[in-house]
Image 1 (cartoon, rainbow, N blue to C red):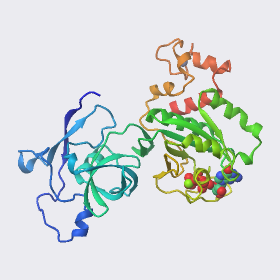
Image 2: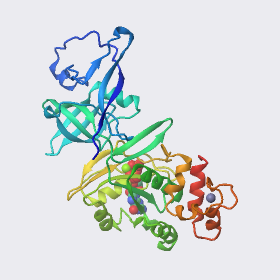
Image 3: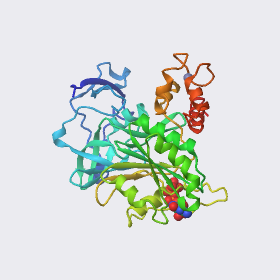
Image 4: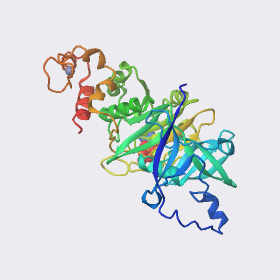
Length: 374
Ligand SMILES: Nc1nc2c(ncn2[C@@H]2O[C@H](COP(=O)(O)OP(=O)(O)OP(=O)(O)O)[C@@H](O)[C@H]2O)c(=O)[nH]1
Ligand SMILES: [Mg+2]
Ligand SMILES: [Zn+2]
């Protein structure tokens, strides 16, 4: 691996920096996000006095978007861990490789860096933390994320989980009705985040198998893993369990499709809360509240997540979309215009392929909706 370059990161001072008061409350101290105030040598204060309320932190630049809150620290005094869940913006459960769990706060300088890049520590983050008391610690560094599952939330990115291997996209055959367009959004999000997708169509007990065949065949034909399940009847659960074995999997999908029910079926005794689809519209209500890493008995981790009504993509440029529709690239090269957007142009090979039945109309419509930002 290429050697990483130190990078200067400018971080705003905390407002109360000038007055350092020693607290008598040791219990509080051990949980205080700033911990014992001992800025490491790699941080220095600018010589411009009160005029510059910034300090420079030497971080490590790996050159990727994943570099969120890295800085040089004395690692010998620290432990490596894995964030199981974030509690609010400043508390996380962190597990070490030996399996001990610490309730950690996030050092203020790290929180500032994260806030400036509009990130937070999330389930799945690899962190370096300093033990400050019995079962408590302070996160000193967040490692670059290898993969992410995230979505847009207004003007911000909401990273739901980091460093996961797979995204299990759960849809239901009915109640709520099957929405291939939503599956397509999750597929794009998985591709963007570097996560392998698996499509699971649940509640197959509510429909005729023949009705599902076209959609299942469409995605299987594109090369995706497709599993048909009925969590409440045990259908397809063995197959799903096999797919999850030894992997870190985040589960995504609309509220009420049966994500928690599926995980409870895969691992009886998990006891995740599930809820009845509450109203006549069959939309379901949000039962799962926070994203949390849950160990699987045999091997692997799963992250159950609260359901979404919509899947707003994050950080996907319109021009980038065509690459995330796996069946498009072979046709794109032959479009008449090199910068064809496959929307209105003449001589568009994608549109011809749709007319000829070589590209699914459903998929093309999904592309158009994402491209046009609907
Ligand atoms: N008929 C049928 N009902 C199911 C199946 N799986 C789940 N359900 C029901 O669907 C409802 C919603 O299930 P949940 O597991 O809470 O759904 P969820 O996706 O976790 O929902 P959120 O946590 O709100 O995102 C519950 O009443 C389940 O009993 C299934 O395979 N068949
Ligand atoms: Mg749930
Ligand atoms: Zn085109």
